[in-house]
Amino acid sequence: MAKEPQGRRPTRRSWAEPWKVKVVEPIKMLSPAERERAIAEAGYNTFLLRSEDVYIDLLTDSGTSAMSDWQWAGMMMGDEAYAGSRNFYHLEAAIREHYGYRYVVPTHQGRGAENLLSRILIEPGDFVPGNMYFTTTRLHQELAGGTFVDVIVPEAHDPADESPFKGNVDLEALEALIRKVGADRIPYVCIAGTVNMAGGQPMSMANARAVRELTARHGIRVMLDATRAVENAYFIQQREPGYRDKPVAEILREYCSCTDGCTMSGKKDALVNIGGWLAVNERELYEEASNLVVVYEGLHTYGGMAGRDMEAMARGIVESVDDDHIHARVGQVEYLGHKLIDLGVPVVRPIGGHAVYLDARAFYPQIRQDDFPAQTLAASLYADSGVRAMERGIVSAGRDAETGEHHYPALELVRLTIPRRVYTQAHMDLTAESVAAVFDARESARGLKMTYEPKYLRFFQARFEPL
Ligand code: P70
Image 1 (cartoon, helix red, strand yellow):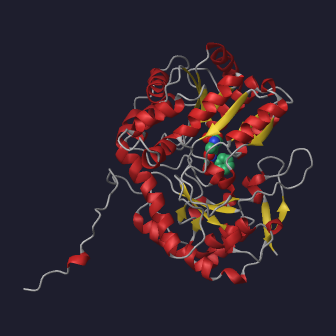
Image 2: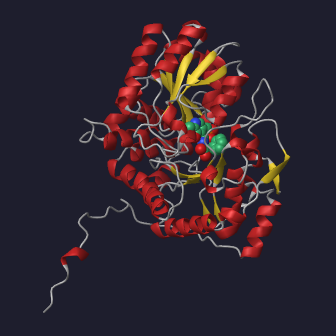
Image 3: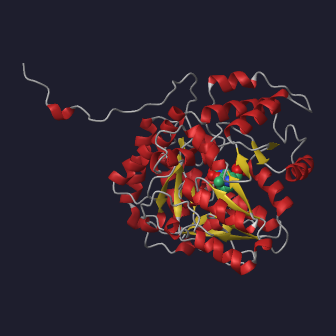
């Protein structure tokens, strides 16, 4: 009998998700004519589409993940007391164990924590350096009278640069800022891992430690945006010498130990549909935050969440640092990303932790940034297949608070964001084929013009018309 040819057996074994599906939610693709109508009615803004009109929803990984049976069981254990809910203490214990901070103030989501932190620490005229801006974070800094200063490494602005840690802080830029404005005008440095607006790019442990050392010399705090810090820890494990054999849980704690506290949107890493927190190590800061939280969120033992929400998040934190979970999560994002690279589609490299970012400038060189290339691309993708993505370019960047001019970000991107534990490989395949089809039709694309522009965070509600 003829032998099977040797070459047909894969040399590397596949990985697969460490779970199986127990409940399903039906989704359907509208007809092409219905999709055209839906996106026109939404003002060519994917935020304004009805979820029921979306086939595969890659708008965001925020609050869209699937909870486990253990988390759902926890939902039934909600202690809905106004004060002192047992679920708060479970949450506090999970944060102390896995993130390592001493004091925890729960909030309804990430921006609730950003509001508290900004109000407490920022004085008018202050500067807040960070490794690239995030929309809500920067807005709260500005509302408190501060000015955000981008100190991310220059390669973060180049979609083709393959550096492993494009989320790193440019230490020279940070030092130059300290010299220029003085340490007493910098209440804290805000670092994020992974960096959302840079394409989900991580920062290294070495860089976190160096930021720590530099700021310590000047008596400046470091606050972490911990929203996707577990994904960052996974990249450290995979890419940074000396971390290959360490569990992600251990790396996360080490990473957080380079900082004085964090704001957190639990809707991402922590595998819940709603929730967040502010955590700090200083008693005085905690006292101020737990006082302010009652003004804006709720009592300091629920912060806008139900008891059951806090239980789900406490359990989600435990699940999120599991090595098999995080490998499969980032692995799925990389699967989609490499598929697109193989199809010749321009994407931000290396592939990030929570999303694949299409490079809309490279897609549509004929569309000026003023005519919103990324917004155009996101709308075209929806029209092609009902896949919903998010603009992360000039619309997201908003206007300069002083001059009123558009910010012109170097990166003009469309984000295909993968919810955790929700979609299959087949959904990723279909998405990749749709992106390739839109890429093949790229030459016929025109831009958009903005017909309605809200004052704050305009990308959420702005409306457009085809040029
Ligand atoms: C997204 C979401 C939220 C987020 C984040 C980082 C690094 C803080 C937050 C705020 C949702 C979103 C928010 C604004 C514009 C578009 C989308 N990111 N830090 O899809 O947390 O939403 O809980 O208040 O990514 O990336 P929260």
